[in-house]
Length: 422
Image (tube, rainbow, N blue to C red; front, side, top):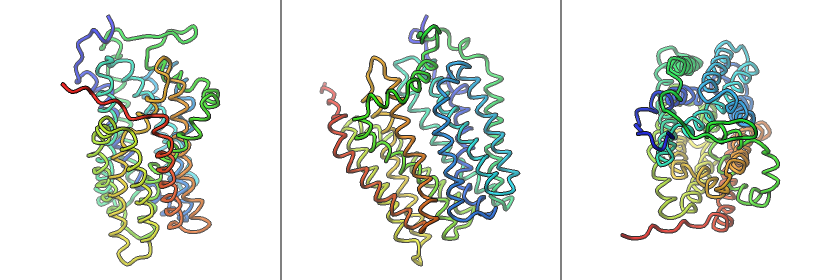
């Protein structure tokens, strides 16, 4: 019997997939706002603090490459347990770090672990959720991730208020990772809970569908990039811009708070409220894409992300710069929420339905290059000029990215057909 024939209950994925995801996301959401603050407290310059914060996205990019191979060999659940263990090691290093260099190494390990955990939970859903429930299950998984990013900063604000130190937030992620590992270890093996699952053959090995998907995504990655170079250099440039502007928010907002003197507690609260705006819109983005087409979600999102960065760039030295910072944080989250799911949706649109995994790996890697490049661009420009100029450059990049999407999105991913009227 396959999973499609089994009665499916939403509660059956809550403990093995959604609860660990929520815990891990709460921990990650708790530490992101305070990484530049902790680096600053350890004596880092503004540029170095930005570099340390960027290392989490760099770790995620490089962690994506071996993740598919690892998960296909050890399985989804062991991969998630291993990722939590690596995160704990990185978090301990961050807690005891005597200088920004040690802190950066710990952050890099957390980024590597995050990539493995994210891909493993995706593979888990692909393996164990019946096909006709899969889209809703993956959407719920994405919403769970965003919910964690909403809760985490508020826990950080409360803990900073109690302890008086920003580094205490690392303990939130450490406890969350430990709880994830305990839940995953104590649960029975999912294959015995969910019954038989779809399997496919990769070479001489028989793998669950999710494990095969993540392995195929990153097998022959650069060969697939070469084969699709025209699309990836055109529309892929727009995808890289989307990844860049999204990732830059996680670095530039806490770095901006350090630059204009916002307190640690208030920084966490502001970023937490902004995450709430983002979370509230994650379903609306999908509705816009399905009803009006991908262009109507992607372009307004990119324009909004670009304008939000430009607002930061021109308000750094104003007397009301804190108010403008709050406005920009909320506006950026609004724009990001409107584009929720756009990269995954475009990847699914463009991939060969007979064998989508290789192209999806190339597409994700292209977006990941932008996601890792922008956080590195911020400290580089800050070191030679200023943080305001870095925000301005990213704002222009957002508007250029919107132009690329306007030019190439209708060609490669036309508007979906309307559903027939009843």
